[in-house]
Every structure is written in structure tokens, then in C-alpha cells.
Amino acid sequence: MKNMTQRKQYGIILIAISVFLFFVITAFTLHIVQLNQYLHQDCNLPENICPFTNSMPAESIIGYVIDVSLGIFGIYLFLAGAKPEPKKQPETRSLEPDEKKLFEMVSSQGAIFQSELVEKSGMNKVKVTRILDRLEAKGIVERKRRGMTNVVMMKNRN
Image (cartoon, rainbow, N blue to C red; front, side, top):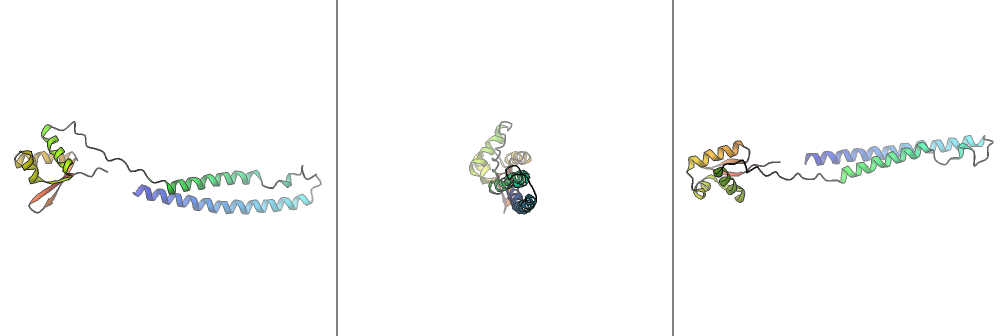
């Protein structure tokens, strides 16, 4: 989420810079065109040959192209949403059979009381606690204290 708001902020900044540059380039272009008209008055060359009769200097065209590119990139940053990263599934191949059994029970339920795990798995409390300790150390599940028992849930992996 932070990445998305930063991209939008950068987009807004680039759009603002692009608008500012547009006005600066336009002001300079108008000034150069006015100067060229003034200089053309004293030029004794024919109008189609005189270098002062160009309506827009090449530098201004290049400036506008760069400015438009900057503005389009700013709009892209502002409008493009950051793609959410897919949630990584924990690696279950490295789990022992008992760990895998408890992991599957927790992942299918989303959240389950530790006492329910003891009942449904057929394992004793001590064994379930030790397995959950290992799963918690691997960063796969987490336990939260709720009264006299724990709620076991999948660890948020973002």
C-alpha cells in the first residue's frame, strides 16, 4: 500500500513539473517568435529564405516532446495501481508428517483453537504444543492467547 501511495505522489509531482515546464516553454517560444518577427523587419532576404520566419523553433518542439513524455509518465504513475504480490504459500514439503497434519488443519480452518487441534488430531497436548512451537519458529503459524487457550492461525506472509 505504501508503494502505491508513493507512486501516486511521484506521479502528481511529475504532472505538476510537466505543467510548469509547459508554461515556461510556451513563454520562451512566444518570446523567441516575437524577437524573430522584430529581427525579420530588418532582414533583406526573401521571406521563404529568411531564418527569422520560422513559426516555432526546433528547440521548442524538442522541449514540448520531452514535456509531454514527462507528463504521460506522471499520469501513468498516478493511474497505475501497484499489483498486489501473491501471498506465498509456506513450503510444506519440508514438514514432518505430524507438522503437515496440523498445518493442513489450521490452513483449512483459517483459525482454530489449540484445544480443537488436540481433539481433532488425536495427539496429546504436549505433542501439539511442541509441533506448533516448530511451525511458529518456521513462520508458518502464529498463536494468540484467548482466555485459557490459544487460537492458532496462519501467519500473515506479506
